[in-house]
Image (cartoon, rainbow, N blue to C red; front, side, top):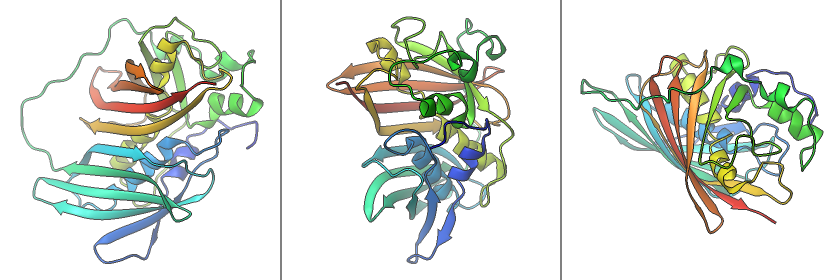
Length: 301
């Protein structure tokens, strides 16, 4: 992997660009490529977003993705092709369900269920956004924060990746957990995020579907950080190994990925080498648009 990155969102749109492949009747299949990162395994958000995109391409117009429930079964190779096979489990008037099985080198690496809804009139409620969060413009970007720093297990490659290689500008409250736990060992944190530049069109997806896939893609980068924070483990801790185990996401309202979103996160549990965290996405005008729950492996030397 190179040690310098142009700050662009193209890494995301490249990840969710799928190529249809011939398959059995009643099933759709697509190939995609995991994107570069400086770790031993591919980024989990690649698989979540690719599977969501594959499922969305199998559903007729008029229904939108409202939940995804996933299991990460094996590490995926970086920069390599994966196969997403979509099974149509049900198509009803109001809801549709898909199963996506993702394999690489003949082995299953990921699976998920995705549910779609046509939507209907009903009562509404939304969680409130914390009122004490500073604006993103007042916070340093990852690149600005990391520029003068070094140490731990951070290499030039990982520094460049955190600074500009993930497709999104991410700004932490109360502070990052790259090299040290900035802001104390609390169970709560928040991350402002937005694409580095305008998201490019993705073949086979509408703009709304692309933006939904972007939310699924970016959610995995930082969701385990509140668990690391409360345990006092920055990313650059020698011997630290993390891996996504299972993941659920609910899409409550449409979202446009052209402005800052606030990702409010909390650690829920940590024990036996695993940690569970919740996250909620809010727009700048305080609309709660999505919720995430993820459990991950957290292993120290």
